[in-house]
Length: 357
Image (cartoon, rainbow, N blue to C red):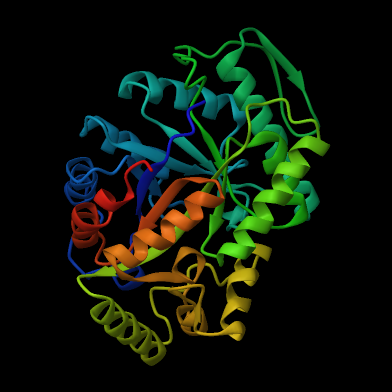
């Protein structure tokens, strides 16, 4: 599979307006509004975008399908959950969308907590959850790459299953990439053996370096039988014309978060997973780590990719992202709000500085 550096954005896919400080607008989640984001991404040099998931949000796969139909090059990174989908149902749906879109889809497998009972799912402890995820990923990949698949595992089974249409395989892309996150020991064991791309949130360089080294060693120890694991970074990038302007705006945003209790930001606070805790622990080490990694948002409600921000001029942020790339990061998923405005700003100012070295 290709390991060239790619830059994606984020589409929040939320029924509530104002996600992470976004502009509060009527019809913010309409097809026209979401299409405006996807076409802006095409026009400003982005590969595509991660589309958020979770019960109580619009169905991610439906949103991705709609946007793929309205665009030409936009590649949706579709966040999905085992349990919400069965492997064969998902493999078939994804293969169909991949065929209809001209091989444009990517998949982010999410194993974090959700309102499972609301959609009729249930699962045990984290060991059970990640065992199910591992089986899901292994079976989906088999269904995409083999015919007449028979499989009977602890969680899923199929008999003589052949997905149609078939995934169009090339040497660079055998099937849609499977992205995966998680920082617990159980999550890393799944990633080391089953994922195509391990996603990290915005930790300092030393923490990312340590995790990459551990995952590479784990892949070897667990006899990974897939192409080498790739690595991605999902982070907020606050970019302005000057360093001073960027920090002034970043501090003003955090002050507003402090005043309103982080309203619209704390969408990862229901249950603090291992990866989230790693981020929240960072602000004890200082408000700014490395050159320009701002940890203060985590004090006031920033969750997930909104917990830490890279702040500065386009040159400042590009230098920092290139340091992550030097560690082995090839997949970058960036964002800031207002989302549409920042797609354009960062597409014009940041992406040109991030060409292949």
